[in-house]
Amino acid sequence: MAYTIVKSDGTVLTTIADGTINTTSTSLGLPGRNYAGYGQQLDTNFVHQIENFASTTPPANPLRGQLWYDINNTLLKLCPTDGTSNANAWITIAVSSGTSTTTFGSVNVTGNLTANNVIAVNGLYGDTITVRLATVTSLATIANANITTANIGTLNTAVINAGVANTTTGTLTGTWTANGGASGNTFIVTNGNLVAITGIKTDNYYYANGGPFNPTGTYTNGNVFDYLTGANAIVQFTGNIAPTKITTTNITTGSNVTSGTMTGNFTLTAGSRFNATYADLAERFEADAYYDAGTVVEMGGDKEITAVQYELSDDVFGVVSDTAAYLMNAGAGDDSTHPPIAVGGRVKVKVTGKVKKGQRLVSAGNGIARAAKLGEATAFNIIGRALEHKTTDDLGIVEAFVKIN
Image 1 (cartoon, rainbow, N blue to C red):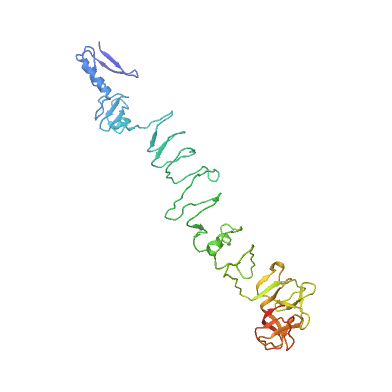
Image 2: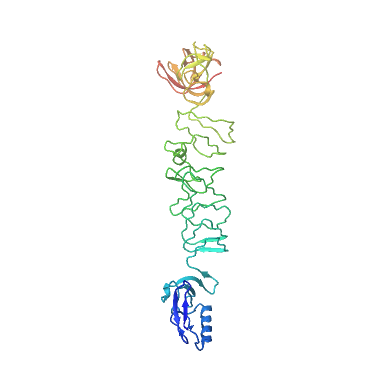
């Protein structure tokens, strides 16, 4: 009675007549009833199945789901449909080599994948992937990730994004070094502010308004004043600069009509001195009227000083100056209410009549001086001595050395 062979899906594969062997329906020899030598064929079938038909070519007459081990490429393959004879059409499910490395085709793991090392050649996808050592050799995008306990030795990437720009906060912890490229730009803040909690240290250059600023070089208006307080500064600096030491050849308020202030107790070291353009010592006193430069004054009137009233007055006190080398009591008022009175040094004096250089000057009354005549000068009425000639009899100005007793 012939054997009818049925496949796993219920379809009939073949019918084998008595005393025959079927070698065309499958890759195995299927003996019929009363086939002589069936034992040898059974053993051969067992060997082929154990070795997964290991050969350089696919087994003949394969069935769907049959395994074949490609010994040329050390690949374990799966037959996709009955009778597939093209080796490239077989599905590779594993690659094994002498290095104990096994390579699979596309594998969908629905549960947990646990391994000491995972190397992703093309892509790594999943909601949760936990690895101890990870090597990303190509381009990777890690979005919505939370890496809190992993240590990454080297991260080579073009973009690190905390999330939505300007709304998500990220944190870098540790000591970081930014190495710039050929353009020289190392760290660029496109929007927002660069906030330093404790301070910023630099050994090279700052960039402000598009130009380089070297903090170890020479400080000029171009790289300090304009960047901090100038009209074109990116941010107007209005605070105080408090260095512990300033070494410079020029300190200026900007012009000779702009006042400046020094606060504190300052001492000139041995050999140091203040040099002045002008040569009189003056102090501000409250006046009972406005007096212009060169007016001779005395103590009296409704306020502290008034114009000298009498000729040869012993009450002469000084001369109004507009070129004081050193001005005391400077904050008392301005020139209209508290004129600077020269009490010593070189100053311009209103003088009437002719004067010879070296002559002593005394009061002529009405805030004016004149040359002292023989026997008129005393220790109390001398205003000073003329430093130049005056050859006319009218009212004029003479530079004199003033010393008030």
